[in-house]
Length: 202
Image (cartoon, rainbow, N blue to C red; front, side, top):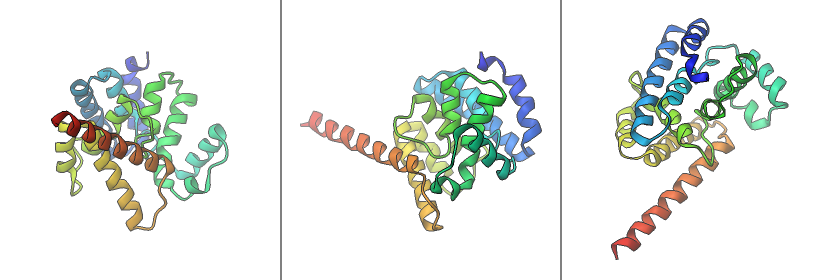
């Protein structure tokens, strides 16, 4: 089982990541396990996915591009214009084809930890939010994000997606379609739940 390979994965990310990024990965693994316990996801898979989510983050982007094209084919214009998120896609492909990781849930959580997507699994959401709320994170809204993560996965998802989309818009960056699909799905779900709650209060 891939969750039994954590010692191997630790050695692999130690070789590939800076000290800062390595420590971040360990913190994300611990936070993912904590959130998994709170919300009922698989704690061991959450820890493993968190540990390896950034495995390609410090790898040369030309190598990442070649890896993506080798296993996933031609990249879209939007993908090519958004290299900061390549590490999620290249990471999933590297884990799947080069390291032989077979657990589809873990691979999906790695693949979508930056962009999110519509139809995310519970584990996908846990790792996505853990990446925002790990102990080492100190961006301006980190504490707000942590508070939301304690209340609701969907609240935290929405806040994270708003943060990502707004950041891209403000710097005239492209927005990955998966992020837009995830945002729309989350908004519609929360509105529907809010409407249902109003009906129940009548």
